[in-house]
Amino acid sequence: MASHIAPELLYLESKWASLVSYGMTVDLLRDVLPIDTRLNPKTVRNHLHRMAERLESELGDERPNFVDSCPRDWKALPLPEGEMVVGIDGGYVRDWTDRKSHFGILVGKSLPQDRSDRYLGLVQSFDTKPKRRLWEHLCSQGLQLNQAVTFLTDGGDDVRNLAAEMAPYAEHHLDWFHITMRLTVLGQYAKGLVHHDQEAGERIARNLLRIKRYLWHGNSRASLFWSQDLADDLYGLEEDCSYPNLKAFTQAVAEFATYIEHNAHAIPNYGERYRNDERIATSFVESAVNVVIAKRFTKKQQIQWSRRGAHMLLQIRTRTLDGTLRGQFETWYPGLSANDDQTSTQAAAA
Image (cartoon, rainbow, N blue to C red; front, side, top):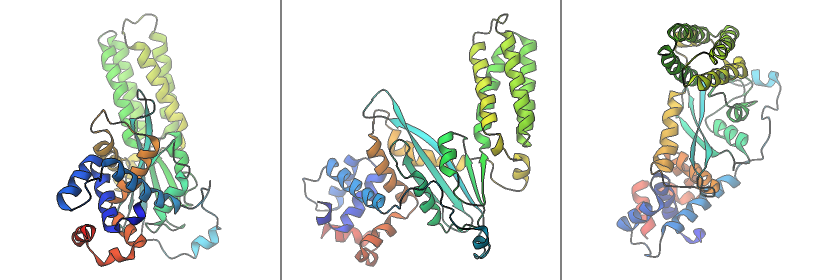
């Protein structure tokens, strides 16, 4: 039972297993500690899951809205330390149950102005308290109800719903990176079209540049109009054009127009934000997705995960990466605060 194991050993198991495989964690522990030879990857995994379950048990109840006071109370709060920027994006890992499919993981990174950054991770199809998790994550970084918070997302419904009603002064912006990524794909289709119908291909390429300019300046209405016009233009070419990817191009443009329509309310003036040194893209979250997911979950493509197993590992891994795991263990086991990471190794061997 994990309760019969030295807290120092539990901490080392959890920390190392969140960074490398369970098998490598056992090898590392055997190299540095005179531990029981019966220790195996399954035992380490079970111990990590129990620590993650303890974190889960401390989460409060899920609620659709965490703003339960009036604006008059917000004005009485002390001035916040500054704006908080929160980026949320997703990735996929292979499913253990259905080995030909994948399931989604959401990864977030919050950047307060005067505090340390923190990571957030959850499995969408497993987590029953995603909004509570995000709320407590932000509160741990000093969130106040009178604080400006900017959420940058890819515009997906799951991500948008997660961040909704999270703070009174929150702004929700569509990430410029995901817009340009879609436009780049459309631009590649247009280049291919030029080889089959030069006039149409060049006309459509010009329209794509026009749409990008409108989006850069926050003119979602004009960009939507020209996106729909572009879709109509392509539809009219379908019978006479020999371009083999025309149907896929037409569908991609229609999907882009729908994407802009659904997220029109979240399209700011990117040019103005850029000139004011305000964030417009989630490049910092793209790197976070790689750090949190790729380097532990998908680096070896044959690795498959259960939803529960991935979710539990995420809770420990994110705290390891942002440096808060040690403090959490010290809260659970006050005796740990007397040791640093070096002496904890000696205590685990005792």
